[in-house]
Length: 251
Image (cartoon, rainbow, N blue to C red):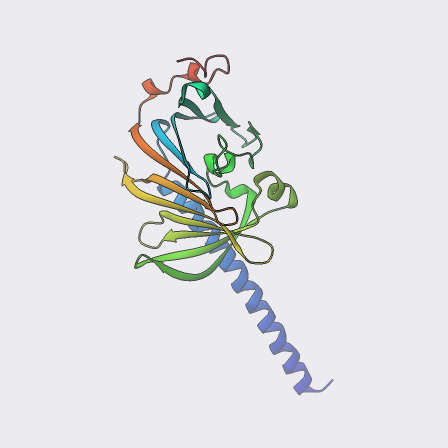
């Protein structure tokens, strides 16, 4: 083998190594951004909210429901509960999701509709980094604010089935890593669903939380808006007994 051939093969190997190294670094960087965002904007250990849920169908008909939301995080895991308050005929219906210290989940299927809306139980739980791989894409401006764009891909077919998601694009503000938008993409690369996190508010820790979340199903022209009307960070508002399955429907 000639020296020229050896040098050419060496250069090819270097290019391949550089490509793989860069790809791995971008993937690691994307995951770090997601995890930093979750840490920076983590909710307090105890959250109580009063919410309004507004559903819109393709004919422009609006359905309004009010909810109470409870979240409690402890060393042995976390629990989230939403209970319908109005209308009266639905009062007491609830969604309860729990995860133990190892992240094992109990509750409805992640892809299940949240009280008949196009918001899902997976949305109710929020981002679960252990279930996805992340890739950094070119940045983009939204409303004149620079954002990181990160592609989230289910780690396996089971996660894709459970969540009902294909690939998603997460838009994180570059200045503070607040999640502004999530776009869901189907297998043909078409945008099928969009979530926009609006009216961000900072709590006393500096973490930002959305005052409204708009979910748009772009295939069926359906929309769900969740508006936070009241927000309290206090263990007194989220007692342990509120998560008792026999009590969640109580007035």
